[in-house]
Length: 388
Image 1: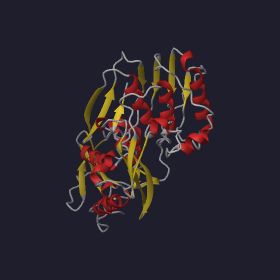
Image 2 (image 1 turned 45 degrees about the vertical axis):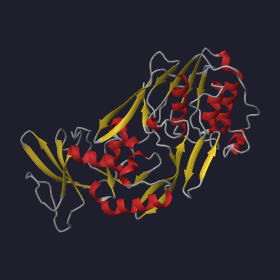
Image 3 (image 1 turned 120 degrees about the vertical axis):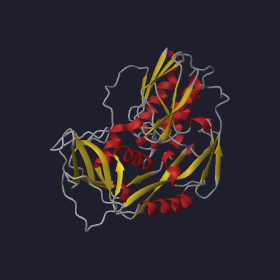
Image 4 (image 1 turned 60 degrees about the horizontal axis):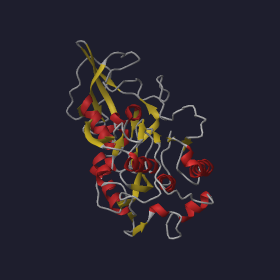
């Protein structure tokens, strides 16, 4: 079992070593490429519950979880069994159900906040956690006047369904003005990206409307986003700035990302690998409707693409924040009068990237190794989830 306080201290040291700007554990909630993988996917709670603490199956069905007791101060010599008495030993770390959820949320990446992805958050809650204060040892449940203290015994094959992947199975629309990008990873998805880009380059003005489908696109290379925007907005606008980012070794890299085919661009080889043959040069900005189909998995490069389109084709961006399980989350939507129509909800990025995976005891930690310090994205829009 990993001590949470010691883990935080070691994470601060890892951030100092690999992440190029000053940060600490408290700020990792908003780092898009920071993850603590501390779940044991072979051990599950023996019962299923929802976000209100209502147990949904088994012998405790319809009981409500009022408190959770974690492993932080658990002493092996104190064995607990199912009983009708209220648990009150002071040596144990005891939380109300709501406070435990807020604690768990504070340790996860913001994309797992229940307000963003309730399904994935609940899966984490149901899996054995190797970090002491997140490891559920006992629950206190209540139904009517009956209160029980239940010792948790993890199992390997739960009766309830654990479905992690939010992959959409939307039927592909076979129309020429619909463009599909399942991934922006050029080296693994070259054929699709190349085919869709060439179709767009050649036929842009044939379409009165264009649909971009980012179903299940978790990101990859930012190059396709820049090439698509170049096609739609041929004349560089004020918001289209160079990228400037700092790396682990403190070197600063800057380039004109709106000219990725330039030999001096760090992405020159990526463009060359796509083997596009030509980049169509239009003289005017695309004036049709653009429909952007987003999903919660749209992080990293796909999030940049979404934000670029919002800057280029929207009106009256509404930005607001909402308190979600102890954390403030940024949201944004655009006017329905825009040439851009948003459908769905995006994932988020903080501008950091290219993580390195560190094996730490019996868990893995992903630490970002670079940070955008200047680019087309406005500072007020980092960590912002775009919604309809």
